[in-house]
Image (cartoon, rainbow, N blue to C red; front, side):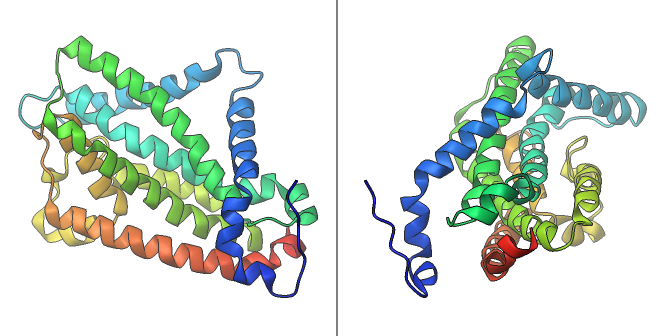
Length: 273
């Protein structure tokens, strides 16, 4: 049985050690969220497949059939779109879940001490389950189109880690802001919807004019999505090193500042929530 010691200033000195000590709570919260995510729904986890699949169909119709945009090389256009839907759906879901995670656990936050960083981190992990389910659908589509990945796929874990970091960095900011300003419950869906259209989900990054490339690359998901396509589609989809470098830099800044702001506001969560 673990012994809990209460002393002045202990939480500041041992915060990161407490993250490890409370790992069982992290597992519990993540597992609970996984179990209740599709509870009392008719088709259950199939929603994790239906949403990105229908979005892909819309994007293929608008960008490929109507706008006549083409995928690079021999890549089938639906595969190009769905390879981008993987990281985007994970990022969007993680953003929505983590931004509301503290509000959803208000009773726990106000009664028990534990490192609050566990809550949004658990929400991001839970969103990764949908990512894994959707990945199965991508594999089925590759079999359907007889389009097999090559050695590039071994770099995929690096881009998954980058997507995790981007989701965590932005999620920490929105999570803390949502506790202080409940307006963010309306702002977050707008951010997700707007981000879908300014990210290269329905189109390839190479169609963006040169004069807009710098501004375009400030979106951290540009490097992530281009990286996923490059890794999954045999390198036929272009990957800009400069855009990837921007994504890595901005993601690191978001993570560091996100942790800083979250820790700064954490002391007030129990009172405000």
